[in-house]
Structure formats: structure tokens, C-alpha cells
Length: 81
Image (cartoon, helix red, strand yellow):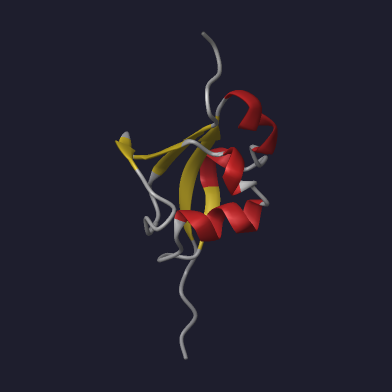
């Protein structure tokens, strides 16, 4: 069985999640076909602290599949009033 080549994404965490940003965030290696949820598990991101996910500037979901080349933005709930 042939092993798939790694692909890369650009990932950015905002506000209180920024501390979770990996060192290789601008060229983060992934296996093509993983979901955003798989990525969060790999990075130990507490899913209950995530409010918005953007994939290539469009709203994404935990089930969104990543193939490589995507730009991911992750936001926590925003407080204020």
C-alpha cells in the first residue's frame, strides 16, 4: 500500500486560542483527507473553546475535509457587551 505524501496548510488561532498555534503554523503538515476535527485532536485543541472555523475565508465545520493548501482561521467565542 502506497503511503500518501504530506500536504500543508496555514493555520491561525485567534484571541484566547492563539497560545495553541503550532510553531510550523504557516506550513503545517497534514495527511490529505483529514477533517478539521482530526486536526484539532492532533493539536490538542479543546473543541468546546472553538466558536468559528474558517477554511479559505468561508465558514467551515468540524467535518470539513482538508486536502492541503487551505488557510484555516479558528476563533473562540467572543465576549463583550
